Length: 165
Image (cartoon, rainbow, N blue to C red; front, side, top):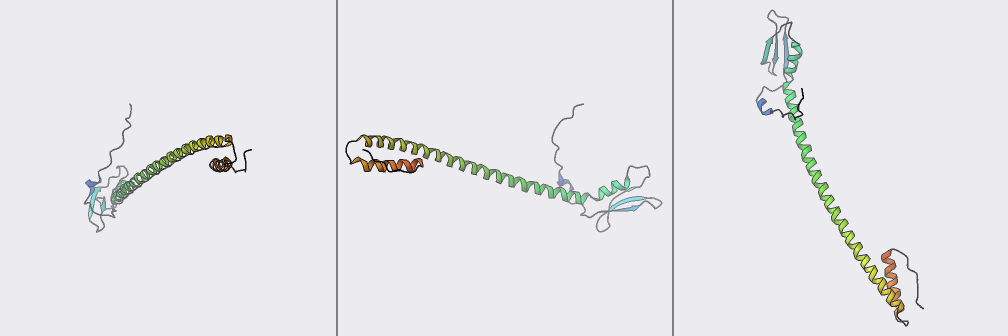
């Protein structure tokens, strides 16, 4: 026999609204001629009862389990509220992470664009430097030195004074 792997349907807790509030207790009158086990509310009102039969399966334990119903329902409600709070936090966190990732991607794209622009500028300056170094006369020496200093700065190297002959 194959057992289906389906999620359990959440218990509809609304069906328990209006029950006698807890704490509930077990009243054991099994030593009486007509022995009874009763579950009683906080004002000692009878919630339920059943006759004690010595052959019954764990009657005291079952009565104790019934008496824990208000506490069990309260814990279920608390857990559902906590789950909703955590789901909300997760959605907020997930949204924050997505926003941070989008911002990071935008910054990386901007850095890439700027690196490409710097590479184009370096190429243009190299061309300018080559032209200036081939230009006859001493008037181009200052322009060549400025171009060389700018190239060194853009490339992150230290400038050295070079002059053309």
